[in-house]
Length: 423
Image (tube, rainbow, N blue to C red; front, side):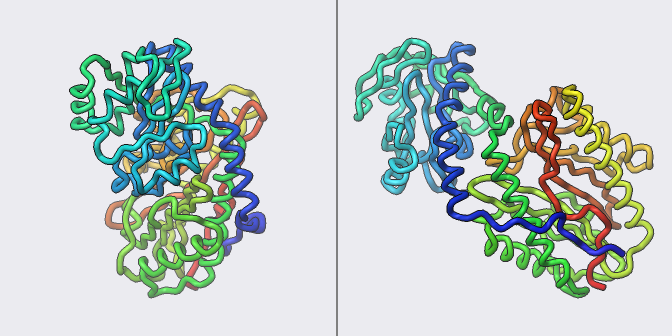
C-alpha cells in the first residue's frame, strides 16, 4: 500500500521577516478595506458602522484578540467606522496594545459599559458621505450628524441592542449581517500567502506523525502529538482543536478525540489546522490502519472521486472564466456520492471559506444560494461519507480560486492517495 508522502517537500515554516511583511501588507490594504465598507454604508444610507467581531476588527483596524479572548475583553476590540475616522474601544488592559496596533484610530476607553458611553460616542462622529468633522481626542465634539448606525447583528446580543437603542433613542440601529464578511471572502495576495503557509505547517506536521502511528495508541495521544508538532514548527496557534477519530467514531463529522485505542482494519480520521499570522488552514485525511478492509477502501475511493470531480470543475472554470455557483459546485460532488447510493450519508455541505476565521464565506452547500464563487477566494472542498456505528471517510483540501489569473491551486499538499499506517 502507498505510504504518506508530502508533495512537494514541506516549505520551511514562516519566519519573522514573513510575519513583518504580512503585517505591512495589512497596513497598506486597510484604507482600501475601509473605503469599501464606507461605500457600502453610503449605498445603505447608513452614517456609521459598529463592529463587534474580533475578526472584522483585525481586518479593518489591526487590533488583535486571540481566539476566545473576546469573552473576557469586554468592549475592547469593538470599533466604529464613521465618515472620516475609526474609533477603537479599549479598556486599560488593552489601551497600549490598541495604540500600537491601531495608530490611525481614535482610542476610546470602554470596559463593559458601551451603552453608557454610546450617546457621547455617536455624537462625536461625522456621518459617512457628509464630509464629517473629526472628533477631538476626547470625543466630545463633532458634526453630530449621525442618525443611522449599522450594527453587526450576528454578534450583538438582544440585551446589547436594547441597551444601545435606549441609550440614544434618536439613533436608528440598522442590522448589518455579513457586510464585512462579504469583503473578507475576496482574498488579497498576502492573505492567500498566509493560508498557504498555514497549510504547509499542517502538512508537514502530519507527514512527521504518520510514520510513528502505532496500533493501540489513543486518539487523544495522537491529537496532542499533532498539536505539539504544529505549535513547535511554525504555528502561532491552532486553527481549531484537533479532531482524531478512529473506527466507528470516524462517522462523527465533528467529534472530539477520546481514550479509544486505534485498531487494525479500521480508519483513522484527522481534521486539523494551523494558524499563521492570524490566518488558518483546515484539512482532513482519513488514514487506513493495519490491514485495510474492502469497505473502507471503497469509501475512500468514492470520496476521492467526488473531490476530484470538483477540482476538475474548478480547473475548467479557471480557464473559461465561467465562475460556478456555490450550490452547483456542491452538486458536483454530491452527484458522485448519490450515484454510489451513499447520498443520505453525506449530510454536510461541500465546503466553506477560510481566512481569519476557520468558517467564513463562501458557503458551498446544497441548502444555500447558488451565488457565483467570490474571486479570488480560498475555500475547502471536503466531501465525506459516514456510516453511523461503522466508519466514516472524509478528505478535505483548501483551494485558492482565481479565474482572473486562470488559477485553481490546491493549497493542501499532503497526499490524497490511500495511506496505510500502523503496519
